[in-house]
Length: 589
Image (cartoon, rainbow, N blue to C red; front, side, top):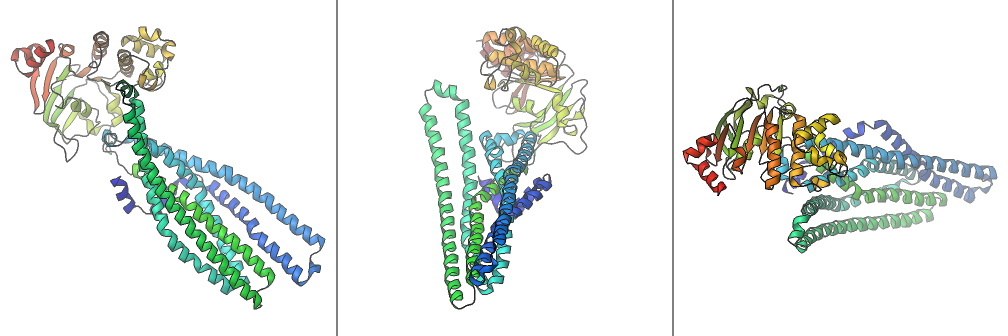
């Protein structure tokens, strides 16, 4: 929230509009024709007072001018204008809105693509519910803004300019008196427009927080029910919901004040013209026809001003949406390809950590300090040790999920910062403890490892992962829907599908991050067999708590907060009688 406020101090309305203008360029022809249609719809409103003035003037001066042919001609002309108005209005209401939706779609595409580029650190500090709010409801407000903003201001501009011109010809002093009120009204309303914008921005933040809380509660519904803590979740939701109500209520109070002040000024302008016009009429400075036309144009003018005032809410919503859109788009990925990054082609799969130091931010302690590791082609290394020592961090640094603070990591002698992220990550397979399956079928989740793979390749990957047998027994086999996050499958089944996904990817380097720690003994045995097949012939790094799973590793590193405390194979470390030996004895007990 603090960041949003700071952003507002730097980003004014004009800058936000300039930021938004490029999205109009893709639809410039549609926009121009839309504004042309808007001008056509304005003609009827501006023509009617002139028609009434003509008829009134004829009646009061020389009624013989109103022949049946003229009356029918005037009526016919106005009817034609109304038909044109209807056609133009249809274009504005349909094609104009479609233009706004297309702009929203393009912005959502740009936003989603940018979100895909942002680093792990961004998602570490940003709630998914907040992001969802920005990519959905915020951009819907932008659609309405994109369509109506040019129309409303263009129409109002035409009406104000034409009304001022015609009214000036009718009676200049009266017109100047009328238009002198408008700047005063604008100044009085500016305060409430600013408060409305602040309120809409704050409400958007609260909606994001509310979405996050709802998402968190629903995804954890099984935990909620297992502890019978529904009332706690209801209280958390109630608190956020009431905060949203409080902010929206405040915004609507500002809107009410905004609208009421507008109505007061409208009344002042009406009575000013009625009274001043009446004196001019009595004094012979204006004719009855001109007086009636003047009142009709005042009505048109005030309707235009009222529309702009009413549009203020939509305008502020749109500006808030653009501001929040720009805030994400201006967030630079902390990790990106360097200018001349090359494609990584892994032949051997060697990995070298050279004086690697890492901390998550400037105000946190170092997680790794001057780490040196050299892994040969096809070797299997295991990382063990107390929680918080940096084992998972070491694994996350290899695919550049986070950037090194100091030192370098090289694959086949090439610094990972000198190659493209895509080629780097294409050569690394990761199997984690917390398996994520996408909402879809078993086949789609396995195919995610290599999009476009054939049915035979998908089935072979499943076979190698030890998953083919249980998949075939599912209701729809490979076409079985796995549910959100794979909820319809057991932990062991989900893990074997994730392993099949990596088999299909067929990377040279493999990272296994506590891949079996959350499984029961039977599932662990099956998954461990799959992992051994997967690791065969690949350079493998395994993070493990269950020490029996890494006894056959070529080398085991005991990682603590002070660095790599011990290094060697299983037999060597047990014989040393150090930390690993103690851990292994405790595990066996």
